[in-house]
Amino acid sequence: QVHLVESGGGLVQPGGSLRLSCVTSRDIFSTYVMAWYRQSPGKKREVIATITGGGYGTYAPAVKGRFTISKDDTENTVYLQMDNLKVEDTARYYCNKRTTPDPEDWGQGTQVTVSA
Image (cartoon, rainbow, N blue to C red; front, side):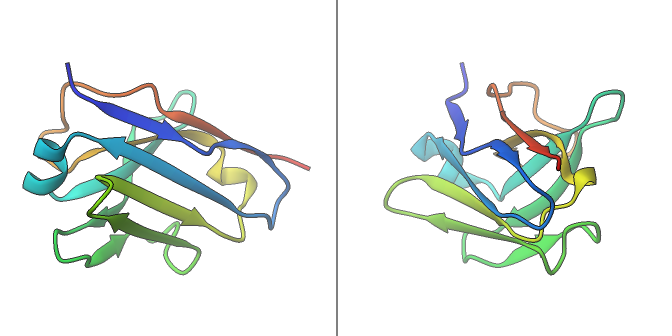
């Protein structure tokens, strides 16, 4: 079973910030491009940020300029700093390797709710 443990979600007001963390296994972390995904009720899961082994990040247009992906190679951990959060960012957030098609095994994710 895949080892993916996300944390850091919560309830925040619009304009606020959260920092998500994801600890995974060394095998996954060192082999794959890692990504943060999110899924809102009734919507398809979408990839919002990716990070290469060299630390290069890419972002979906909806989060570019507000979210920052980073990683700690010594801790097999991927982070997502989320600033200027909007109501539409409300979703369950997951991290995983970035593959096509999407991976089959997922962690529990962490819920982010943006509400006044």
